[in-house]
Length: 180
Ligand SMILES: [Zn+2]
Ligand SMILES: [Zn+2]
Image (cartoon, rainbow, N blue to C red; front, side, top):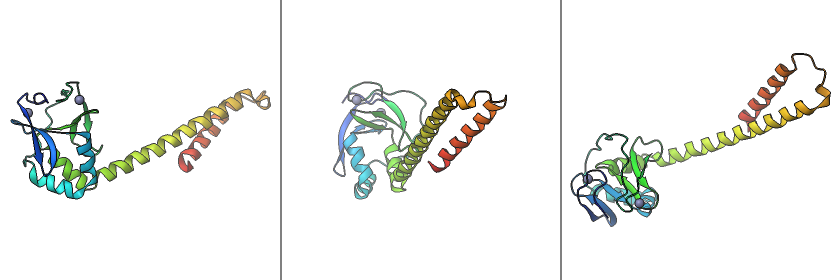
């Protein structure tokens, strides 16, 4: 561990409620390994115990779009909204863990307890289904376009052919979006 990614003060290893974290001695930011973050997402008891043990602080307003260095490997971390809908921006090193500024870990634990992760998962699932539908619709559209362009039956159609073809394509796309 190097210095605090936020304020450069010394970072020390702490154990709160049996959970190992690295803590900044000045701003009380906390760094949690991916395994710790996963265990917190899973266990209500662990969240409760940890929440009671860590310093109680109100989260500071995010000090702006500044990229922080991972306290473990020193690479720049990604800024990410925790659980997608929490509104809490954390800094993530995929290999080493998540940096929570002072007070943010408590806010994140509250968010998980309110069912935030389940909500984020539902949103992900909805997006995935929607993307699948759009993909299918685009595929059908493309096939139909090819078919209409190459079909000899359509030679000699009047000037409205492209318009009618477009309507058919729109209709098919709507069907796919609605019914999958
Ligand atoms: Zn600090
Ligand atoms: Zn790292």
